[in-house]
Length: 313
Ligand code: ATP
Image (cartoon, rainbow, N blue to C red; front, side, top):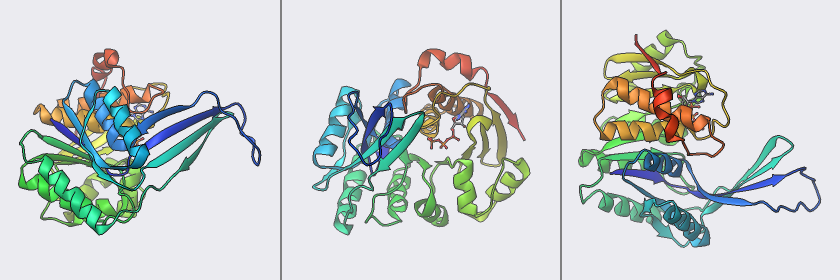
């Protein structure tokens, strides 16, 4: 079973408007509200890939209730730690071909809530049903920057594989705590550039040199996603360049999350290097072809899978 982690989930509200009128009333007829957050996108795509999935993280209040109802409707199992603090709304106003977003930060959580969540998380690993954990996105305010380090410590102790897709300080902390290791990290090229404080443009030699650094030692898989340019990957001491077909993207938002779902499925099934990379890229490409975030059309899976080109370098 795959356990997906979303620490700061949201209700994503979309307001389509013909025109956004500033400093006046805007009325919206066609509102859509869905459970959002990178880990929940992973959950949805993993379900579409016929994986057994359970979603966890922290939720609270009536927004938290709504998130759970949405997951129930989508038949995604969940087991969140609940607080009394309200989860967040994220609003996207679609107007005149633009997307204006208003993103709430979400609740400020306490040290006690972190401790209680970690107990909840570690208890979920006890029944030996979870074989892969995906950890996606940022941490809510108030939690320690080491929260993912502590979660990976629990997973490592149980030999559960971990796919980590985060950025900034929580990512840096994991990489610099060398006694714990995620199985896979999937930074995109700009997240890697921010971490290394160096602008990468996809040049293989440069990427290879940086991934050989001490920060990345003993991380089994490093998959640097590069949007329409595919990915650069390292598995143990093998390096791969992965090309994806040229397509007309509809919405690339959430393609990294779909990629994580593909990685988790391949890890769970113990696939070969080539298969894992092809599955990861296919799910990313399929998400890019959809308007909906965290959704793929599985009917086109084989068509795109066959077009992914892997070169060992
Ligand atoms: P997000 O944060 O929105 O989830 P990301 O930045 O983490 O995404 P990307 O590197 O943009 O992830 O994309 C992940 C994968 O999705 C790519 O490696 C590729 O397989 C596929 N992909 C994304 N954009 C495109 C595109 N324009 N054309 C083809 N494939 C794409």
